[in-house]
Image 1 (cartoon, rainbow, N blue to C red):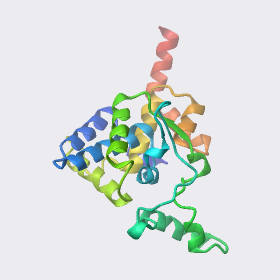
Image 2: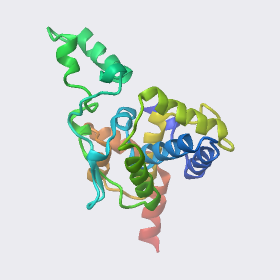
Image 3: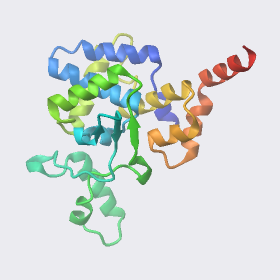
Image 4: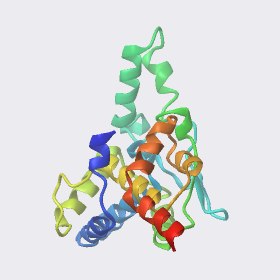
Length: 223
């Protein structure tokens, strides 16, 4: 876990990254970079979840995105599996007893773990709401494969003030979201649910390392 946490951005650097997205010349690329940074860096989307996101996952009235247990992947050539899913199926085939590639492929896309199929509220941020709405209106979700997702982030990093290409990653943006909500006092059960962790210890690591929580607790008891 440590290497991912080290890629978590401070709130100050997160704003720099968003500024990098705003500086992208191509208007479509600019918006797409901005949207994925917010969805990963404030909602904690995993890369595979972002890649397969569609507007059908969104409950607009309740302002909740539900990561499903399964969503057929048609982002590859000729409507087949994308490279991200194909790699996951290949790995499972290598370690599976008796299941064929085609049998496992029928299960993809699927979240990383059963706990990762989860609801993610987005009501708390108007700019996150706007990004999701525009992405849904423009493309009905994320329209491209994983490689394009990575390129949009790389371009935003290249153009961001005071950041470099190693400052964060798609997984690092998820860690950024975890640190952000931990610092605001999200309780353990809600924290674990929002990020889809099976292991409580993963959630506790974020809660325990964040000094803002200790500062706020001390302020509460000494005010």
